[in-house]
Image (cartoon, rainbow, N blue to C red; front, side, top):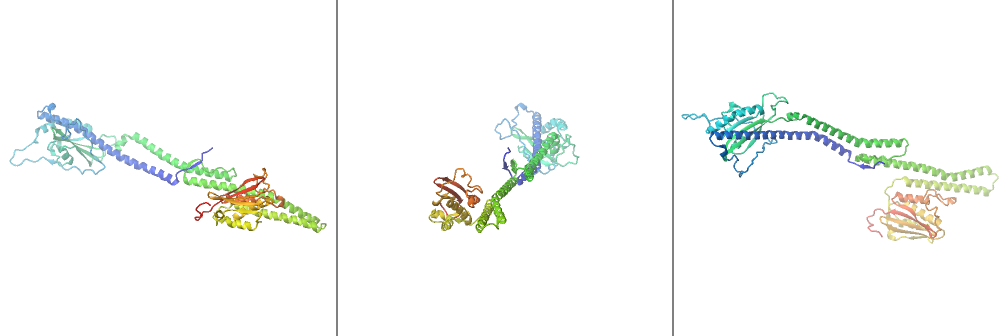
Amino acid sequence: MTAPARRGPSVRRLLLGVNVVVLLVPVLAIVLLRIYDAHLVEQTERRLIAESVIIGEAWRSAWLAARGVDEARAPDIAPPGLGGASFFPIEPVVDVAARLTPPEPAVRRRPAPEPGTVPRAAPADPAAVAAGEAIQPLLQRAKRINLTGVRVLDADGCVVASTAPDRLEGCLVDHPEVQRALAGEYHAVARPRHSDEPTPPLTAISRGGTIRVFTATPIHSGGKVVGVVRMSRTTIEAARALWKHRSILGWGLVASLVLVLALSLFLSRRITRPVRAIRDAAQAIARGEPRQPLSPDGAIPAELFALSEALDAMTAELARRANYVADFAANVSHELKTPITAIRGASELLEDAWPGMDDAQRGRFLANIQADARRMERLVTDLLRLARLENAPAHAAEPARLAEILDGLGAHADPARLQIQVAAPLADLPLALPADELHGALGNLVDNALTHGGDGPVTVTAARDGAAVTVTVTDQGPGISANNRDKVFERFFTTRRDRGGTGLGLPIVRAIARARGGDAWLAHSGAEGTAFALRLPVAHDPAVSAPA
């Protein structure tokens, strides 16, 4: 047994969700690429920090040796203000999300000697130059491996060692990162890279990025800055980094394609599967097969859920009406067959034996024909009324009131037999059905009670039942036999067929009540009498605030 259909999200939301996911894939890729690009810049800065610390300590050792200071007794290398901390790591500070620093300014030449003075061929601290010369071979060898640009500056910001030997005569005091380092603070900047060289291949060690990171790390000794290591390196391009991880990238691309394909198949299944189920069920009904529910199992889009429910209700109603028409035709043919046969037989006898009949015989046959014709007329009238009640859609009607109908019934009945015991507040309540239907329903019940109740009185009472009023019609007749109690509301069931009964009175009462949201039933029946109940909803009436 299939599970009942569940109302899922609408097609609009499904399409929106899939489109958002598909749109987010490239957006997410761009965001991740930017994050990865920033990570590469940070990775480059961390590498420069690590190298600059090693180079700075090598230069510091050579500087102390040139000054004749034992390194074991050298002053503390910690920057001032750390309170004797044992560790003072340097964290990256470059933010590529912000604007890049403008290109580096021109290198300032060393000041020329004033006229009449002795020319100075070296900085104020010869130990700084000696230390620079000591580590110069190290810088040259390291450059061949890591391609990093290095300049070691003295306390005045002038170059004393460099991976470019032709740049030993300049001073970088105009560079913002060097100014911060000379003040005792690590600083780094990112500048756009402009190169006339062709872009290196993806597999080359050279980097073809568009950003170059510059770091300036101060060298401390004895609480003051004695030098600066200024390093630079071009960041690796994201494309080159991704090329190195192309296998992982390929799997990610495959996963993205699988995700998009899965979403497309999911959306297609959520829409086309219920459509196909509805189509197959409709085609089965068109072929005359037994009706199957049109609602497919599982969660389906809201629009298709509503469509399947509407089509299911429509086919159920069409099937009910088709069955009703078939039953109606069968019942009509059965019920009309008897009076038609009687009329035909009487007319044939009159035709064949008319000359030999006396007036009394002719009158008797003609009276039978007229009685059967009247019964047929009542039968057709009641059938049409019942069919209209059972198949016509409910519509808003002018509310009827019990008082008006009961007054009309009392005026046409024997006051000694019909006793109406309905309180005035209940009699004046508006009921949710038109006056002609209420008159028909109560009239049939009262006529039925007067006919089958012998000579005893018929009592009509009413009681409030929440949002409805229950009217009970009670007689004091012999009651209904146990075998017939379950049949009294069946169409064409009657015990007065010989007296023209159609068996449609009580079915019409029930049809009127159910068409308006009420009901009719046999309340009780026995030797003391029979009672039928008619429950009718109260119409909305702001003037009615509480039950009587």
